[in-house]
Image: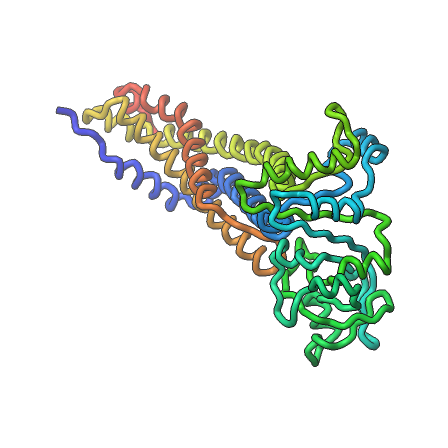
Amino acid sequence: MRRRVPLREPVGVALETLVAHKMRSFLMLLGIILSVATLIVVIALISGVNQYIANKVANLGSNAFTVMRYPIITEMEEMVKAMRRNKLVTWDDYEALRENLKLPQRVGAEVWSSGKSRVGSLTIQDTSIRGVSANMGDIDAQEMSDGRYITEADENSRAMVAVIGADLATKLFPSLDPVGHEVMLDNRPFIVVGVAKAVGTVLGQSRDNFAYIPAETYIKIYGAYDGIWINVQARGAEWMDRTQDETRVLMRARRHLSPNDTDSFGILDSETLMKLWNQLTGVIAMAMVGVVSVFLVIGGVVIMNVMLATVTERTREIGIRKALGASRRDILMQFLVEACVMSAMGGTIGVVIAYGICLLAKATTSIPMHVPISAVIIAELISAAVGIFFGVYPARKAAMLEPIEALRTEI
């Protein structure tokens, strides 16, 4: 009975070859290393940014959506039509939704502009001054590090009070507790009643340079010439669709739209933002797949050429093995396994390099990176598959050698 060749033998031969010919092995695997490293880094970047966007940018609040003047529009022609058709969302719209909607848990409002904050000689430019209704703290799940949020009493009295972000607290009040002290917002005095917990940055831009004031105070000072945003919080995830439908019906009724008319307002939720973002990253990912494919093909061709050279170098060895009883299948499997192991080793090196790049990027920059284990597994499978695919021809050539002719070969 013919003895089958253990798998460890061709694996061992492949590893010995890699060690014995270090430079040749490196050059042979360079394409695989570059392609796998590029693939892992791109996936890590997209995955990390997706998580970041979902948690810090597209997060409109727990089970919340926003009614605004425009929906998400990606075409210029549609934007021109919307600018002619869509009216501002007004304070009257907010009051109508707040009083007549039955399904939502909360209905809040916000309006904002960019201004200047100052305490004494210390000044911060481009501060986001935002007028908010009292329940926006619950809709946004805004956490406070000190003091309190805006209250209904503040709204009703149009109080000159403010909740400030961490940037204003640390830079304008470096040596004292801001609560109870005065901050100048666009040269108007406000008493600080609370400090929000630090949120951090989005792609290098701080999200803690803000001041919240009562919405009615804001409108009294600045007006609402650019409209407001109405934030609606559903009772739960399962209520989102029905709550959006009720909101849409009421807004269409207020604007006297017929059934065939397009909405003259926009409804934005986190899912819509993430779909748009995923479309963008999908295009980037497809472009990178093309780049990675080029590296893979180059790496595969190099592996095939090196394996052909290896077959030539080991022709006499192949003849001896066949003379001792090795079948064509044994020879074929030996060279296929060697090609697969070598390619997989290149993939492993690529994964290690990519992981190091991701760790370095996280430590030295604000770029979010996340390496999913699935990406590592896929990269290893792809690299092994490339080795098998491009190793078939050299392996078949070795398997087809005649023993007598192989033994006569002088290397």
